Image (cartoon, rainbow, N blue to C red; front, side, top):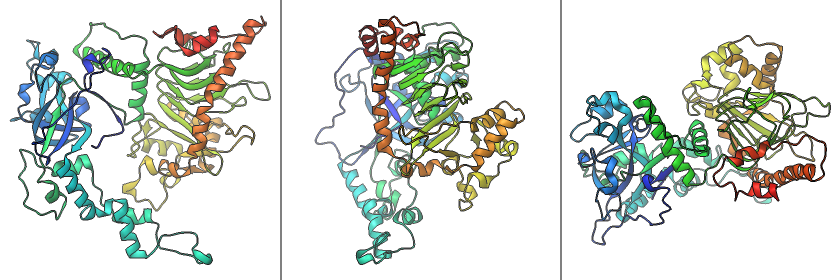
Length: 572
């Protein structure tokens, strides 16, 4: 079984909160063929399906006009699933392409369209038109598994670790290393990683291998395992459709933020007024919230937040998500605010104001993601534009890398940067391509994935092992966002950013100290306890000092208020 790691699945979304522990199993008789491959599909709007794989199954009309009563539809002993022969697999089809398919049809309609006598134009109702989306779960039965094993020794040998090692040793006779026995150096022209990049073919399970399998629209190949299609075409692809299934894709930063924020909302709105687009958006919001709450998503978890406002409003944003973080601002200063729809995780930021006593302003825009921010700003400002991602990670050889990009930036592309058109960013900032990419990277392969965008911050002191926080580079990004001329501060920030040592995301995995990061995250709860103790001491000692309960405001909105650990500690 192969499953995608950026997908959350529910196979019974209509009863997801019914606390039903009955397991749903798809079982096959011992006499059934072991020769097949099964894809798992759930219904999804065409606006979602166009960004994923889509199964076209035969006899799709069996489910037309019945999605609203699917719980009463008896298939396979009421297990809520059905095995269908597959006509074709589409990869990221356009909405027009899906709508134009017929005999069999690619699409079907939800109850909102099917039950509306005035809904005669399906093209105008694409928000209520569905397709069977590929969930990323693919099951290979035993005979198909044997074919994969054989392919790993032949046509896909260059794609396996064992195969690549064998080919590498055949060519170079040893592995690249710093030194061999008796100090004799063993050198090879390239590392095994570089060797693999040069000879391993790019094969996608969903884009290539699924299309090689036999469907009712394909012709079986008589080839004897000489290539990818010849090896797989003898295996039939069938689709397991689950009409009540639910699909949530968390493959982008924006999707993750929206999921966490929706799941952390206090209640699910039931307002039925508005257009059909609003109704569909509300239905999607309700589905996501129910899904998120069923797996325990909350707007507050191991969190201490105090001294912040929601823009010009006194209370903190209800849609703010704080996870495993301690964030303290100046509650009497209106220059401390966090925008709606923002997610903060693994942050410890005690804004003490620095040795000089002055406190800089802390302004975080809407729909941002802050992760791993730690240390003291020492009076510096922290102004993060809306829809930005900012993350700090420790490096193995000292220092921290500060990842910074727009929430909606395509990491696999080079079209936008910090939420703006990349060409305009370069033109207005005076940066050139060589400031972002090594000359060795061909123009056709330049993306944000391999762009040197993320500056390295030095350690403030050896005792705390925290970074010397300086986010002045955000000033020139904000100036470009506001479409204004860079002032002296923004120009200086741009110069510092350009002169700083920066690395690309593609190199971060080999540089980051994962063990140190895990240790840091595990200690945040103890910091939270200390902050709660400060409040307790202030109350018990009847001290004439400011004492804010902002950190409990979010907890008070939770349904499980009485049993919440933070509330128990505070009341104790």
